[in-house]
Length: 419
Ligand code: NDP
Image (cartoon, rainbow, N blue to C red; front, side):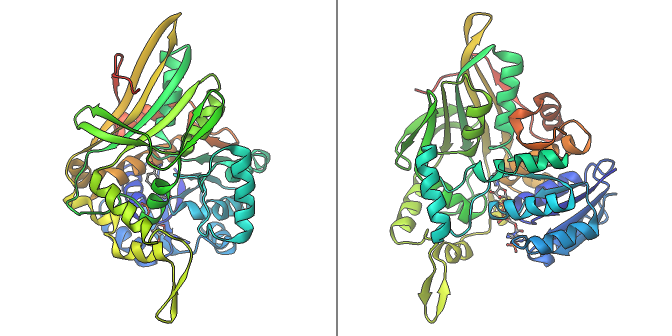
């Protein structure tokens, strides 16, 4: 029995909410709250006769702590699932602390306005201290650790697939497969085709900012930063086939480097087709990825927001996306004194996701882990007070839930390694 407040009603939230509604014995009552209430109402109306979960809806601007506090106080949830955008992580955490409610999200904080001079000063200092220059990093949310601990509350960060399941895979490898892990390569392959020349699979603004940033990886205790898309490898993915992939900075590298300190190298690769890369480079070169407002015909517009309005809505890609995703981790290390390699991954079919929850596999592979993370928190399996990432918790019940609710793992004890 629980009351859960979900904030956001986009592609990922749609999947998470539909999956929660398949477990009404745990998710007894759900409030869907977002900026555009009509989207929440439409989803609630669609699910009304299909679930025993009692659904209500609300309008909220999650950039405003006072509005969030008023909503949380009136709904009195056991858990707030933040499935809005990374820009809202801190305001929602503040409201959860003020109302003494547990918190979870699917992506770490990044500011919306990266040109704000005050933020820029903090960012420049942090880049020098930390050795990588992504706009997103855990320092903002880790700064809440003591406050959550003292309040006896749990904040679960980044419980999608990557970040999220990939860290559970690391915890699983550490618990069951290795005595010592030497290297981790996280591989995110989308072998799907939506038929558009250019579209992003999740929020275009967040996606394009992530992909156009410098890449970085963790090696021998420090970050190595590289120009965007400058390290390319090819990998032959199970059920997808050979794909080009590129090294990116990714948030779970940061927490894994802290939580599995013996690891010598952690890298993250994502596959991209040539058409995506060519379009992105062109958009970047003409200034369309900029977050700095410009004056256009008497009004102010932010180029990347204007671009978002032109691009297909990721939530609309479901019916037209065919093919599979393959996301997982390859490890090297030692067990009982012997060298060992291991690959754990999930393969997910875009059309199968669409038939089940009317979504493509990118939203599915994020929304299902979000539901499973909430399940861990609500059923008392992941309750340590403080601010935690997925690898800090017992991976076994989480991976069992993923197996059961749509994202089963595959394993190989002799995978091809990445040079
Ligand atoms: P969408 O853009 O589809 O949805 C975002 C939702 O948040 C929309 O409903 C939007 O409302 C709402 N929202 C935005 N700003 C506010 C606000 N100020 N107040 C209230 N609601 C707001 O994004 P996705 O569903 O694709 O992504 C959701 C999250 O999942 C993101 O944080 C993304 O980074 C993360 N993600 C994580 C992955 C992982 O593997 N860990 C992979 C993919 C995504 P409106 O309808 O009005 O725009």
